[in-house]
Image 1 (tube, one colour):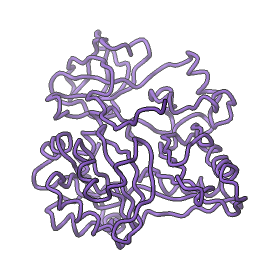
Image 2 (spheres, rainbow, N blue to C red; image 1 turned 90 degrees about the vertical axis):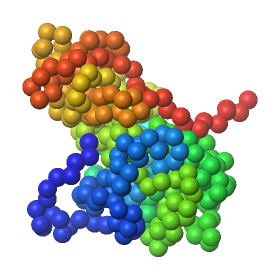
Image 3 (spheres, rainbow, N blue to C red; image 1 turned 135 degrees about the horizontal axis):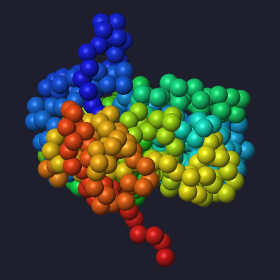
Image 4 (cartoon, rainbow, N blue to C red; image 1 turned 30 degrees about the vertical axis):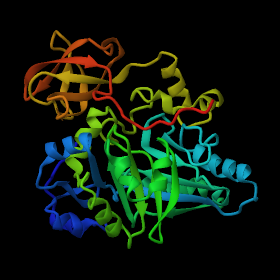
Length: 396
């Protein structure tokens, strides 16, 4: 969860700024250290107001601290399919997803794994839509792990492909039920994108990479702009009365309601995709080939050798924060909360956490320990708030 932790002076000096830092300060953003950057946790309206605005209209987030990048083959054959397969093969040495089968313009959520099947990071990998960019992948990793992630990708690609970092620019997330209406007045062609697709678009002579994706459970877009263009894009989007700036605090409560994992909390190098409830990210072709890191453990867990699993909880009373013990009805500790907080859309506390599989069925009555006091909790299906992604009908 988002914290405003005290930092020593040396650490504070090392904080980085996104290209939008001055814009946040001008808007009254309360700036806090996060992921090595100084970012706005909220603006004057406050976290709950920003959360509700995003659920009802469109919120604009600065996520430039993330790790966007492009992986490109050193030598291309001229065959779009062969070149895609070659660059996909590099990424597939690190992840459990089927990158080879990506269609032009498609994005895939996947997991970078260690040899024990634990999660190094969760990330997005995408194939460009145009044949001219064949042999290239658009890769977005998490902020806190991007240095080590980039090092792993560069090592896997050595002599075959080059990794081009794009994290000095601006990455903006436009999220909410009115995001598409706002986008229609900004880059109209981008509204033709379906969920988990992307493309390159022109805006006033500027090159923007726009994906229809996000981290709130709402329809929306993520926009990658150059360092010199980020402020112009941010300012133009905020001219739309449906769009307001939203900070890290509401981003976290929105993703929690959507039941989406946060790396370093609900995912880490001990947690497998199966334990995290992300078995869908282990693609069928990869399972059948058993050719991804940690396959032995993960396939066993998928076949039933699973001891714990991530679940959703509704909590009576005060929110149970990360690290709180999950108890059975006899007050015996059986697990722990990995993310927790207040859900503005529901008006109650919710949490994600890990419990033994025997306690994972929706409806199971449990307890959580909050400041030494046991509070009633119940296992529920996630997402807590339904996803509203824009999915195009399948071609008949």
